[in-house]
Image 1 (tube, rainbow, N blue to C red):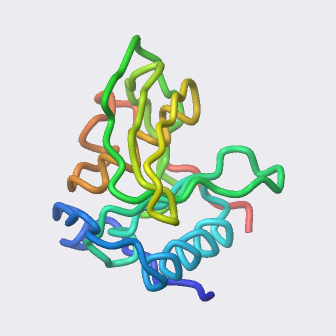
Image 2: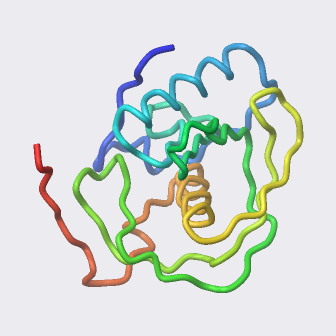
Length: 160
């Protein structure tokens, strides 16, 4: 496993649509593991392959940070959404120290393949629903700044 180079605001690749993964093999699993390691090294809760410069429909998410395995999703698609939630301080690893209010579905149902190519369905609400929507948007070249409520962007400096 290894850390991947993150792409940041202004990089054209972040606006491109990612391609479906046709075969879930060892190369895809290795990439998912690298993405997971990269996300955790940056204290993120989600990361899409496009954020490390790869236009494949891959996402990793870990909203628990309790030692349980991260979600590693191949070709995720939102098939159902319900309600609305105000995500007050949504951020993105590709936009360091920037946070904004974003309106997202309160609940979603996502179909995807897991890291072994098995079809799975995830029913999510609250933070997990927010993260799934955010990361799946990335796969379509949509950024959280495209969905933010006008005038809500905040810049918060690192404590480092």
